[in-house]
Every structure is written in structure tokens, then in C-alpha cells.
Image (cartoon, rainbow over all chains, first blue to last red; front, side, top):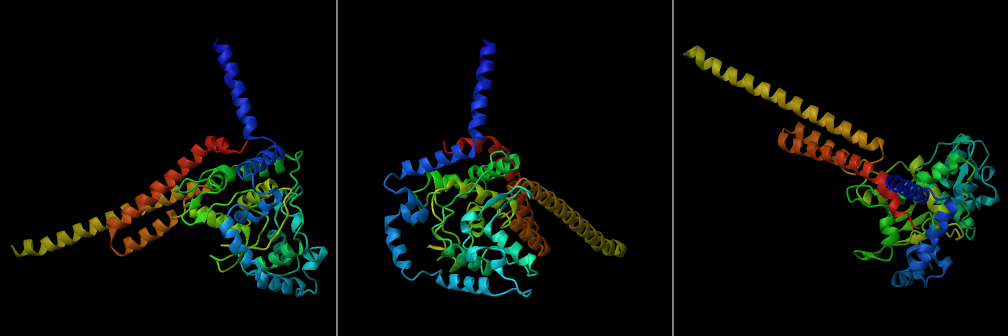
Length: 277
Length: 101
């Protein structure tokens, strides 16, 4: 009997372990199915519109805003920066092909460096490689450049690749996933609490958005910010909202979180920059 | 008698000065301990938002002579850091139960 119980416990632990460390593709399918089941009337492609895919009242407002989008100035400023040569005569187009329409290539796993490379990180690395100072990561010029490049890339599919034969890549993915599901801060909330089971609920006057489609529309012009900002700025804001200390923008934690979260939205289209409240 | 009268305030001043040194040492020790705990929480990614702010405010209160308020803030910061560390340990098991399946 004791042997049977031990075997049963071992099997249960093994199943539990498998569920925790399921392969990325199984995770992605389950993740997307959760939202398409929870919001059956939302066409799959519409999840890329974030909160506006499920909140009909806000959607009307948003569509009116989109007639004169507040992020247009950022796109223009980003284009100017992109086209202005560096002091060495080279420019961003020497780093980014196709006039900067490369949003669909990010984030990606760099096997040699053993780390996740995001678009904003690549922008700063391009600058540094050409003798320019790096930009601050949360807002301002980097968000404008990212807005221009995202605009040029609109319609590209989210297609993050997790090399399943690379243990380091899988470990980075697993850390990003764990970050998403871990509760933190004095309010004891995980990202998934608000944007999984909580999506569609209201916090005061605001409806909580579904996580499926979260990474497609960045950078975002937020009315609350009165400016355009990057996804890492939002990650930091979310952490602070639950009264946790935020992490460094473009530090390992947020890049791996972006890696996981963007992979979860594979198949949708990048449609940034966008406008949110 | 005169000697006694002179020595009394001196003794009192000495005692006040000792108490002040002791209270200063107590504050510094408590502050250092709380800050070390905060760093321990940060090392595992579980520092809470306001812990550092409480420690900074505690120093200001202490410098302004508000020892009681300063010590309360230090205790609060210490408690937050301990809670963050406990939360990290708890979540090592619990997070997996939230994964969408």
C-alpha cells in the first residue's frame, strides 16, 4: 500500500512538473484558447486591439480618437530621427533593413549572446555601434523611433520563435512565463490575476484588458501619460500599481517577460503604435 | 552644597547625552538591519514599492529629532522586506497553479 501511495505521489508530482514546464507551443495554444473561450464573440484577430476588443463603449471612443491619432507626431519625429545620419555618416537604415519595417523580427532569442533582443535594445545598440549615446528606454526619442518603425511594420505577423533545442532559450522563456504568473508586491497580484481571470472585470471605471494581444500595439500613446511610451514603461507601471518595486527597463526580467508575452500572441498582427487611455 | 548643585546639571547633561548616543546607535542599527533585509528582498526580485521610501523618510525623521516616528518607519520597512521575501518563497510553489491550461 505504501509503495502504491509513493508511486501515486511520484506520478502526481511528475504530472505537476510537466504542467509547469509544458513546452511553449502547448502553453501558447492553451493561453489563446482561454481568451477565445472567455470572449467567444470577439473575432480572434481583434484581440490585437487590446481592451477595445472587449469593451464596446471604449471602442467607440477609441475609433473616434483614431481619426486624428495622438501618436502621429511621434511617428513623424521618429521618421526624422531614422532618416537623420549619425555623426559618422551612417544611419539607422544601416542597422535596420527595409526602412525600419522590422517590428515582426522582435523580440528574438540571440543564441550567441544567450539573451533576448528587443527592438528598443537593438535601437540603442545601433546607436552605440555608430558612436552615439544610448537613449533612455521608457519614453521620448526611443519611443518615437519605435513608433515610426512599428508604423512601417504594421500588418507583420507576431511570430516569436522559441528554439526548443536550446536549453538557454527555453530557460529564458520559462523565466518570462514564471514572472507573468508570480504574485508580487504589497497587493499580492500576478499579471495573470488582472489580465487572465480578471479580464473583462472593472477596476473603478476601467475595464481590465485580456493578455492575448497585449504586446502588438506598442509603443502606445497613453492619455494618462500624455505621451508615447514603451512596453517596458508599462511593465514598470503595472509592477508599481501592485506596490512592487519595478525592474530596470530593458533589463533581463522585462526582456524575458516580453519574450514570453509576445510569443503568447503569435499569429496576431503588429499594429503599433496605438492609443490607449 | 554648591558642589552638588553644580554637579547635578552636569550629570543630567551627561545622561541625556548618553541616551542620545544610545538612541542614535539603536536607530542606526535598526536602519541598517532593515536596509539589509530590503536588499535581500531585492536580490530575489521581491522588493516592494515603498520600502526604500520608508527608509529614506525614516532618516529624515531621525535627523529632525522625531525618533519615535523614525523607528516606526524603520520597523515598517523591515516588515515589508520580510513579507516580500516570504512572498517570494511562497510563490515558488504557487505560481504554477495559475498557468492557463
